[in-house]
Length: 223
Image 1 (cartoon, rainbow, N blue to C red):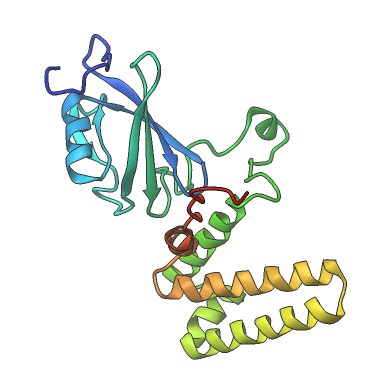
Image 2: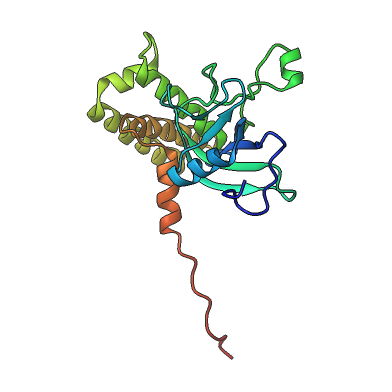
């Protein structure tokens, strides 16, 4: 225990629960256990490592599937007995192939339907990107996304240009609803273009954050 950061409280088996959350969308992906060594490995490599209670050994998330978790930050709770690990997840986090292990609310299960991202939130971008990644890995006959990806970069770029032109027309001559619809088309085709280059909305968010420079406070107000 001496190698663990001060303030952490491991249980009698030398473990601490770790809640893993996608930093880009806020999704809770999974819960696993960390030993002091697993925590040390996670901090040293920048990728999540856990302790398997069933196999009694250390393991790295994605060591067989390739769907690794890249750590952005680690927090402890106020009691020091639970960790929150913020990550960028590659693909699905769950062994079942779902993005998150928490696939449905209890009420949704009773109604026979899985829980999705809240309507009207940025989390829907992650859902769209997962579809794009899936179609890129395994093209599906009849899929519009598969057709776009197969057409190649020039066709995808032309499509983005067409959608941008339609946004301009909608902004100048059409209703607010049409403008929203055309912007949605533009965003969708842009996500496909990014996905074809192994890029995502997260890279665009990072660039926007880099450009954002709060204006310096004036040293004094004019009298």
